[in-house]
Structure formats: structure tokens, C-alpha cells
Image (cartoon, one colour):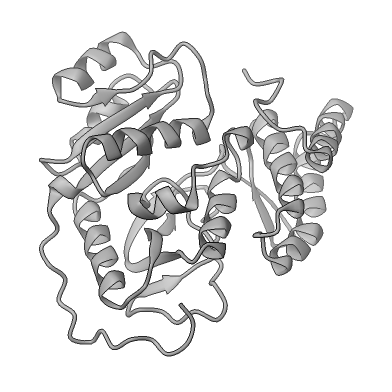
Length: 309
């Protein structure tokens, strides 16, 4: 995928076929009516799959079923985001789709987003690019830090489609043929960092991750932003922050994670943890939990966080 970009100036994307697409939504204690409202933003004709990781109200479950959505879990146990995404991918393939649009329960996609991403994937194929995922540019929701999308060095863009190191799962279109080659999301990561590891693995196996700068989707990470002297990090529950720190440190031992990224994380993670501890009032229990998470990451102790609510 390196070198001169194939000419694609004359490319005219075909009208996307909704039958090629499934939409996968992960749910964890959504607000009443939240998921049914999300369905109203989706185009007709797409298969809608919902994975209940817990807390889906019974009335919403019934309403989703009446709207034609398929619910993949009984919601009795939180299996984590990675396991939910893998189940959604398997169900989408079984439904005959070749693309899976992933959405969080609080996503607010433009109704034109699915067609735009399918067209973007077609454009990449016409340019002989093997893409694992293509997603919209992130827009910061009010009070939230916009997610970073660092560029992938040495890979040329295709029109507005920019190669990036990784994309957030929500709002992204997964190519299911590529997913079969790259492999599933790491269920032992449970929740944080699963998209980073998977995208780095995709690049290592010859599949790219591309951002479509012509479309956007708002993103919310955590419950606001911690800011200090120009630095910013999401404000999250302690189990989330600890799992992020654990998984980030464990990723240092993975050969497909670029050395440049590991070095950058080596500088950034201590600062991020310090900002989080300061925001928590320098409580000793918070520092102890972050320290235990760092130890678990370095020792390879993964899986469900022990203090998950």
C-alpha cells in the first residue's frame, strides 16, 4: 500500500446497496428510548443488530424487536465491548452483509453516513487499497476532547480518504472480509484500547484504516475533559481509566504496535495518570488502583476489570 497512489480522479462511486450493510449497536444501560431514537436515524433496508451488555429496558427490547432489530444477548452479563463487537461481526456475516457499521448507543450519525462510508470503501477498492475500516472524522461534542486520529506515515491518501493509525469503533465501517483476515477484537482487553490494537494489527497484516474527511460524527469520551496547562485527557470512571492504562502498557509487548507509538505512550501515560489522580483529589486509593493496573499490564494480567460495576 506504499508508493504512488493509483489514479482515481475519474472514480464515480456507485449508489451504495443497503443490503450489503449491517448496523451493529452496543448497548450498556441505555436511557429509555435511546436506542429506538437511534434507529430513526438509520436508512431503511439495513439489518440492525443490537448487543445488550446489560441494562436494556424490557420495553426498549420489545420496541427494538418490533422495529425489526435483532438482539444478540439476554443482557445478564457485561461481556465487554470487544466480545460484543465480535458477536456483532459474526451475526452481520451470517445475515449476508459484507460491511458492518458500528455505533455506540449515544451515537448521533447523519442518516447519510452509511451510504457515504460504503461509497468511501468502494473508492478505496477502485484505488487498489485493501481497507479494514473506514470512518468519519470525529467532531467534539460539547465539553469533550475530540479523539485523536494520528496519520499513518508513508501511505498516500485517496482523495479525502486519509490513512490513519486507528479509528474509534463508533461510526466506523468494518469490512467483514478484512475482519476475517485480521482476526477478532481482543476480548481480554475488555473495553479500552481494543480499536487501537485491532487497527495496528490490521496495518501489520496489509489492511489499512482510513478516515473520510468529508463526513463527521460527534464523539463523547468519558464525562467531560480534564485540562491542565494545555494538556487534556478524558474524565472517566476509575475502572475505565485503569483498564485503559493496563491495556496500553500491555500493548508494549505486541510486535505489530509501532515503536514510535510505544515511545509516545511511554511519555504520555505518566502525565495522563498524574492528571487523572490530581482531578480525583490526589486520593491514595485512586493512585493504588492505577498502580495495580500498570502492574497488571506489564505482567499480562488482562480480562474483565475486577472492580467493574
